[in-house]
Image (cartoon, rainbow, N blue to C red; front, side):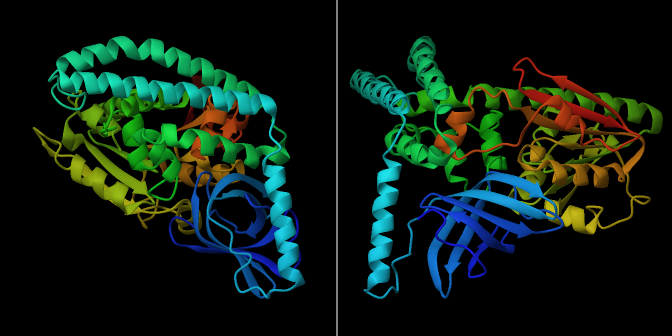
Length: 467
């Protein structure tokens, strides 16, 4: 199947997670992978986004209808080169004449199937060992849970203090073995040739998904109910703001292990660092002017404000504008934060539904001028983890024009040393834009001061930019 679509008759049409229609020229396609180029002066795509209603057209025939997850974005002049993983069944034999053309497609299917089973032996062994351990662990924990029920002891999700105590005692040695097996999985994943990567991912998911998708965090990261990774639901679990019921002792065990991996821990460290900065800026500005104004771009849960208000910050001294492309995230944050009423009244919040494309095209998120509405601090918690460098640079330049004199921009990035990258990409289709300190620093407009700080995981970078 590889490379059989080309030329002006080969196009890709899709909708992004915000229902904006895109159209591109196909470069390469296989049973699992799609690569196409698209012109857009702004950005209608981001990493780990689910593309809906993807149509791959050859001549007058649609050969694929379904969804795809964006796995790589590269800027090439005015073009975006986009790689995506196809996640639905092919439709290339629909409406086809029973003729030589069908025979050709059948031969291609056999070739693709054979290629998908030419796997690196070490990879197969690592996946098999992890799957075997998780299956045995599931069986053992099911028996333990059944014994507890027979003894009249409440389950983990109920008021069962003895079960929670037992769980706390057994989970760490069980986690250690999962960690050892995942470490080997990460090692052998680096041995997989790039052209065979998607076949290996498909194999790993066939073996391991029945054993890990019972974990709510893994399930949400993979299924992406909002159409992209890193949405407010996923962040809520990562940050411990919500604790969904895993339904079993095993599901809880697997969920807790993945939530405590390196990247989730880095996101929690990032929240701690962001809260420190927001408190420092707000206290300084309030002492000087009495009121501060903040803007969150890609606000997600906006859970930082729950934590800040818990420190005793007067609610009437801060004006907060929240920007996100997801209306559900904005409404959930607004409904929760307007209840935060202090001695001097409720927190002053405004919400604006804007995508990155909107911000780059239209400018100021409120629709007002920067002279009328400017900010003491503009920050973005996780948005830049999914944006290509050039788009990120454009967005930082736009944001810098919304600051008051002496204002600060705070954003974050993930270093390429992530020890769980294969786990995330092979099993959850969760892709991040990894950078080093130099690449992150290149986003800073000339004439502005910058400082980059790494956390104790070594993979989370905080970038502070001041006018």
